[in-house]
Image 1 (cartoon, rainbow, N blue to C red):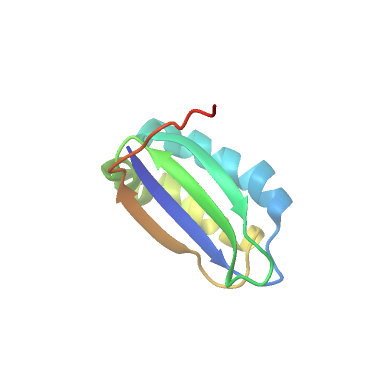
Image 2: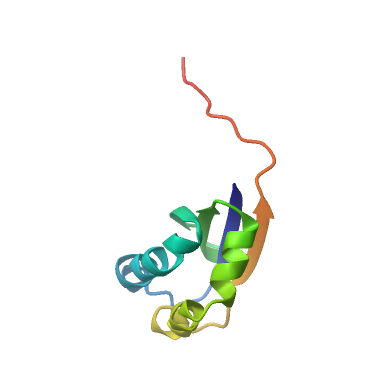
Length: 105
């Protein structure tokens, strides 16, 4: 498994409704065939240097790399200004080294 993080710097112009209801369903449909397994969208605390973080879980880093290089990515990355106008997100990616499901007592 692998994780890709898209981190959006703070600013007044993030359209969360568009991002969650329009953009991310397109991401799921276009990148699912490349190995995208699921995603989570987090809003970060007020006053932080970043306002939103998307966590995309992939079968492999290679799957993300192939998706990002595919022609489907032009639609996905081209949609950025419809929900965020402050620049570009920071993109980090990495292979999952350890994971554990913690059981509550």
